[in-house]
Length: 239
Image (tube, helix red, strand yellow):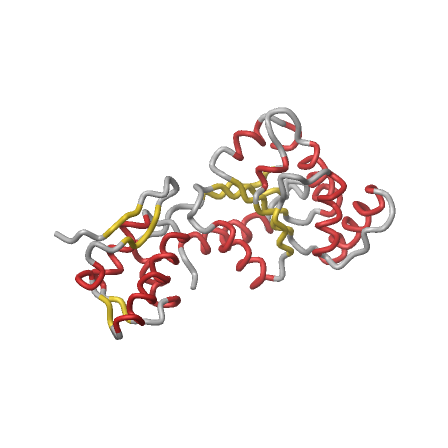
């Protein structure tokens, strides 16, 4: 299932692969919570042979390097510099791209030490590094000019369009959904993939319990399809 956002990632990868400056190898991927950044980029990594790592709040520079090395199948023995050199040597040989999700944990307003280590690796190897963060992540990176100068492209991911939601329902739902219900899922989810998937799961449970072979808006009238980040339920009330 290739959504609009998936196509944006593919386009960015092609453009950056043809970049003139070898050291400009960082790509920032930004977007609101809940629109499916993690699922999208992990699937993209799997389909293209990229290494996918999810950053952690508790990361130190050392533990970050160990997690990257482990994902690449490398030893974590020796000093932090030993591990970093091992990673750099591997990437220089394979040119395997790195995708780091939750990249907001790599830098804040006070320090960018972990992001500087990633920049050092990309500088030495020329491999592309895709950093996936929230909407304000590029603004944080911009505070560090020596890192910002390495950014080749910023990709803005968007909430799912109606066409994207139609494709998701067709690919994921195990029961037939009418066009009107798919429209309702798109409105209630506000284009957030997480909510779309929750809505599909809810509908499948109701369909199985009631032996519905096709589900329409009338079947789920008054039932909560999705929940927003405040916990408030979005329900199809009809009319």
